Structures are given as structure tokens and as C-alpha cells.
Length: 394
Image (cartoon, rainbow, N blue to C red; front, side, top):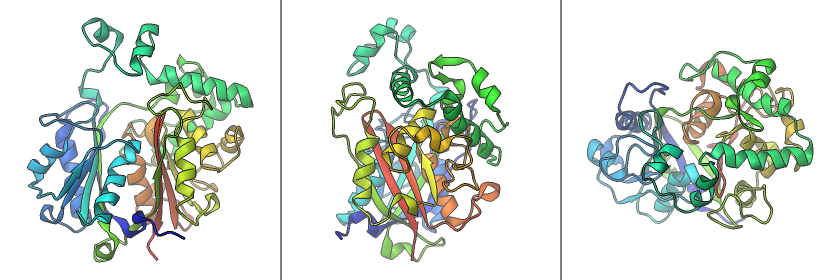
């Protein structure tokens, strides 16, 4: 089998700030805290960091918003001396990890600091009112705003409704995702929403865009997550056993740049990224001990489960029904930190942070009871997606 570059890389350090629903700390400061924690967790100092990758691009001086900390400002704040840096976006929220792998493979860097920072609660977002006030939509948004649909909840509701109607997936089955993740969040002291919810709570929640209620939508927040990706031969000298990148892939094979133009709609980029990942490993879905799957909206979890091969097309509703299979004690524990539906919208990097905690056996009350060797992280939707397998070093 071909030896792929990611297998020579490992996560050696992780760090995460507190997560805020109501802003009290400048989001850039949260990003600095998360990065400092990740560097210390890896047993490194800022002088050891020779690569830096963040997503999305953030110009110098950015301290809040969808990307609250750019490479230039983080480098200056931490005193980094970088040989490589990037803020590319091809693998959605896993883009920094893919860039780190490329830098290490090319010999440009040994220890790469990767982060995702969010200041969504302390920044004004685009709305219809801001559009009338002078914001000019571009790209795909040009097709959305004239129809009063600037929100991804509306776009994805169309995908979800078509898929659920085609295969008979029910809102009760969809609700099992939100209910299970809220249970897990109750064991996570950082989670924004920790009180349990019942199926009655779910079905009676305010609708946003059919079939989504407010409990199907992720929670905007302020926070930051950081990880250190290191060359494997140096990773074994770090304080924690390295978590090896077994397989990492992205793909967008049909109408890149469009959520709505695919010939196989309502499929999305995860149906390209997931098979690409499995082609880079001998592991199979049955080998995965925990799954940390992007849940910007609950239905994305169902779509990813099908794309990844945990169930057949149209079978994801039955797969999650009742929540037992995806619970902490189930055969595929999923989104054990509460995910973006309950912990907060850490934009996929929160899932990566949790996967590493679980593989280390360091997730506290929510630690999965069975032995863990392989975890999966899947991020993104629409026209960008990335899929990653992590394994304990052997």
C-alpha cells in the first residue's frame, strides 16, 4: 500500500479556550490562550514552532468575527519564527491540518501550530438589513439573498427535506442526534447548553426552516481551539503518546463552489471526501471506535454517516433511532462533547480536540468506557469537506 504523508505526522498537543455564549473576553485573546495551551501540552515552547496554519484567512488586526485570529497577529503575539504558514480552505475546518501535513512532508516544518478561532457572538453578521445597508452579496449568495435566504439553515433544510422525504426518515430519528448530544454535553463543563432535552422538547421546539428547529442548529459562540501537528519521529519524545494521522482527505468532485448545483443533489462534498479518505488506509468503518462528526445542523450527521459507510444510503435515520447506537456506551459513540448543537459552534475543530481527548483517555466524566484505538473526525458540508482518521501510536 502507498505510504501517505499524513502517516508520518501526529497530534502532540491540544488546547482550547473557554467557550462563551455571551462575550466577555476578546476573541483574539481566546485564540492566544488556546495556542499557548496547545504548545505547552506538547511540551514545546514558541521557539520550537516553525509552522502555523489557520482557517479562514484573517487580515492583520482582526480580533473578532468568523475568523478572529490571523497568522500574522498570532505569530507576533507568540513570538513565532516561522518557516511555513498558510490559511488555505480546501478541507473546510480540517484545512490547517492538511496544510501542516504538507509542510512537514516537504521538510518546511517540524512542529506546526494549527488553530480555529471564532468571535461570532461579538461581531455583527450579514443579514437582510445589512444587505439593504450596503452589503453586496457575491458568489453563491447572489442567488440566495434575493429570495430572503441568507442563512445556511434555509439552504440545508432543502437538502434535508428532500433526503428525509425520499427515504422516509422522521423528525423523531433526526431528534435522536440532538438529544444524545445534549446528554453528552451535560458531562462537559465547557458546554453552553447542558440541561437534558426530551423528545417532547425536541418536537415542540420553535421551527426555523422545515425540518429544522432551533435544536437542530449549532450555537454561535466565542472560543478557540488549537492543535500541534508534529513530525512523527519527534512526536514520541513529547509528554503525551502521539495521536497518528492515519488518513486525511478532502474532495469536491461535482460543481465545486456550489451547494445546489451537484448532479447528485442533495448529496454534498462529504460524499467525495469520505471515499477519498478510505482509499488512503486499510482501516474500515468497523474499526472506528468513536466518531466526531460535523453538526452545523443535525442532518449533516446523517449525511456523513451514509457517506462514510457506517450505514447504507437512506439508512441513517434507522441507524441513529433511539440514540442507543451513538450513545457513550453504544457501538459508535458520537460527538461525545455535545458537538456544535450543545457545546457550541467551535466549527469542527472542537470535534478534533474531543477525539484526541478520547484517544488519550482524558475526557473526564464523558470518557468512553471501551478501549479506543481509532477515532474519526469529519468536518464540513456544502462544497467543502474533510475527513480524518486518528489512531493511537503502536
